[in-house]
Length: 206
Image 1 (cartoon, rainbow, N blue to C red):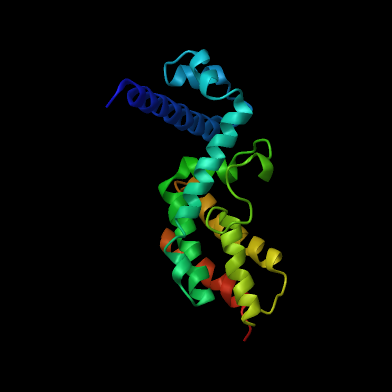
Image 2 (image 1 turned 180 degrees about the vertical axis):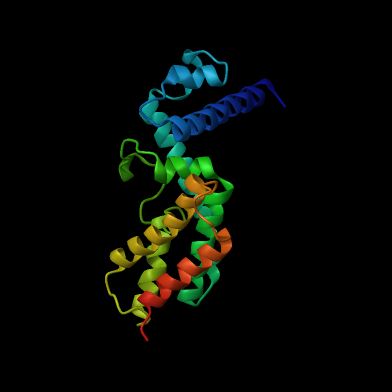
């Protein structure tokens, strides 16, 4: 490995360390409470090193969201080949839940931590492309189910948002409240599968 390649690898390692530290701090303490200096302190770098990679906190959170949303979209690659829209919707919901369980800090930042809205124009994720945009992937399945006359509701945006809300409720409760002794929690897989079946039963024509 030559000097140029070594410098590039080191640069990527530092960038990854910054993103991982920022994600953890944003998820635990909230976007507003975290400063660039705190992120630098966590990885034992100077603030100058952070600004070399990201011009400000907004740029940093945009990079985090782009990275994490693309990672989420990749979870659906195998699901995309399924022909039956109801089976595809079920498998998509389970893949989404696995992502949240495997990457709880990613999920907290993406869906449970308030931060400045990200416009499609500022994102590296191609808005509306099902291969990169997880919401577009979900909506494409719903569009297919509606076109085949499977659902009684014809508003694909409404259906997509309700399905998302239902599955999000399961994983967000798991992340935030799984150790709450007040609740006799049923196994996550059981709750997840039941939620998805309930949503589909409510949407599908008899």
